[in-house]
Image (tube, rainbow, N blue to C red; front, top):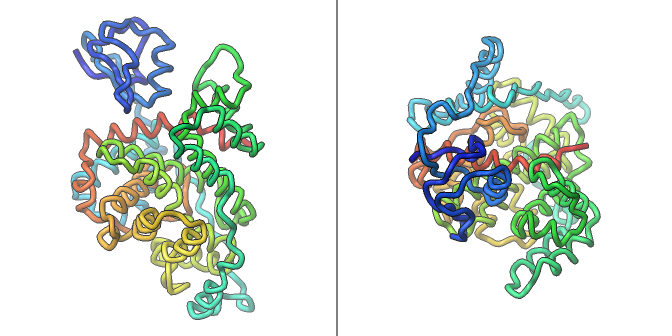
Length: 407
């Protein structure tokens, strides 16, 4: 008997133990011989590994080393990402190595750094005092909370609601409806016939995942006019989704009830950056330029240029959207979890952000991680074995969402 990743399962293998989903519902029984549809079911329900009869040596997909030029490019990028971390710490060292392997395996070579032209002298930012005055008036222009997210959450919270109830809300948003149908008809799920009913899509994807997708789409629409020279919005969403999924997976591994709250915290952890990019582009431009010129992280440059950072600015939008105070606390303190009312929750978001940066899935515009509390991994139950489980589950959960990034 041996564990094997679902990605490495092959038809004909035989389960040595029953397989359950996260809600302890039986998916496949002990002794079941694997066929292709079983692998699809396991992926849909987020199962990342199972036990099979026999030895798995030699069965895992081989990892072929990249050419020296790629390896050097990835190493240089990771050295920049992790330069403020103590890589002698065992788990940070493990994250570095896992990130290197992941980037090489998925051909995630470092993107070209965005270096926007510096603001001309006549329109240069006037300093922290000026932006703080403008921020006080920001509530007048910040977008309202997306109605579709509010309605979806109300339906999901009602124990009596059905997939048809959820479908009625989804149908109010043509963009969300189109995305959900694309997802369920993608190669990831591999259904033999086309699915054209939203209620069926809801059943397949799951209510929590739909709420998450709706929030991601809403954020993109609220901040869609940001100049490309400041941030790649697809890359930003990729990074944010990866952080959200990572936070959710870690919460589940810790048996926390607030898995979706942590997903949203991870998804919105850098929402303050979008506010700066959209409403204060001259400060965003100066911040990015300062970080690049001084070879420092954007987080430190924000404080130098604006007198405050994106987490403090995020609080304004979170309050306007009437999001729970616990969620606000985790987002605002994800760079300083020891100051949060819930240090464990903020620590999970910090670790999720760190891992998303390391794996190189998308980018928030940050050049290097500002630092990380070395006590967090132990506090949230992350060790070498758990780390690789998290990476595998996040990669599987991100796969069906790739449709969001199609033009």
